Image (cartoon, rainbow, N blue to C red):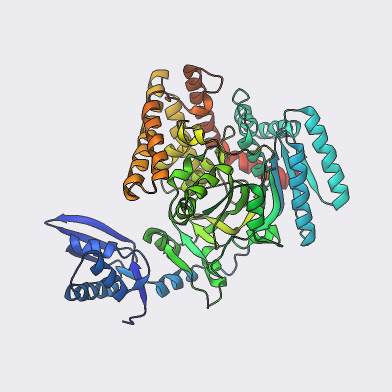
Length: 598
């Protein structure tokens, strides 16, 4: 066996047999064997591609073994490799490439959509920048503005601005405001969709407000059957390239594969950025809608792909089944797009090192100005979805967005991962400028004095992650999860209150445990970071009994009213999930048979 060949643990199942022994089974080779648990633990620690000799040396160093014992470990690993309990890098890559489908050639991105609400100046800046980029590179796509503006003056301004830009650039720019969505709801109802469900999908719940997700649902139905790019109205089509590691591609099981760089202000962030000229749509088309096997076949032979960030089970999925990139995401430079700075306390790897390299860098994070991106194209099975600049393959069924409240894109990402078979996320090593007009630095008290509350999206995400979706088609999984939400939402008020409280307490408890574990792992270093973590823990423990309902429903509501609102929202979203496949098919029929878009 070549000593230079690199191996890692395959996708192995473990079954305790008692007496310090385990039965292990390799999914790749269908081999089984009974070993001492201590030997199985050695195998399980081989989680990166290295030579067997390097694995043996690392294990010997970790457990302070003699050279004779390290040699025995190498012999054991060699035996396990021959039986398929360890897989080689070459074999793994070859199997992934064999899943390629030469007939699979995704179409170009057809539409750039911009959801907006009462921000006409930002919309004009964003729309102009994307039109100019598309014109520069000869793109033939159209544009659509999904407008949820409450102000009639703003809607009139936007319509006039669209006519001006359309004439100036000879661009096809479509518009859908509240009136256009109401007409589309009527068309859906005429085709058999219940009126209340269609209205909830495209308008949300007026008493809650913040209908960003409803606007995104309108964009999904408008572009059904196409590949499209959705960008927020406070982004600008200026592309920055983060530090890269050459022509490589990575697969990752990390929930968040992006890395952060922090800056004291926007001017410094922009000055440090490597802005490039590039076709914004072509960047997404490098990954969007493509088979993963095809992507690895397209890489030059001289390129070494990074497969070490993926779990063994993810690598097994990539080797023994097809899988497409359903969504692509750019990074961002500028405002971090986070509502509160709490997430900085739990950063890991290089982002943590950047944040905590000095107390000054730590303070810079409060400016909100960051560069956040991957440093090479990365395919993940994770569910982190940031919709400020997102490409979506809308040729197959995608889940709906929660029509109301914040972080509906986070919930969308989890539903996409859980309900769509072998649909993956592609992260792109470029960043778009994110520059909202009202950006303000975080206040230090937001980190140290404001306790963390659970939002509606957090609770729905927790339910989606823990619920067993089954192995059916995507439409069946959406309906099954919808029924689950209906069952929960149909409980008595008392039972629903108890369910919600225990769910919130469980989430808070897990977060507290996570922060305490971070303190132990990092030996409470550096002290300025540990001090803030301890302050947050103290706040969380004091506030745990105060937050028994979703925090984002507590604005202008008593707790009892907020709980009723949450229960209605759960019922409405459950019904929407059950009807969404029919809504999508109806939108597709309207488009094909009658030429009707939103």
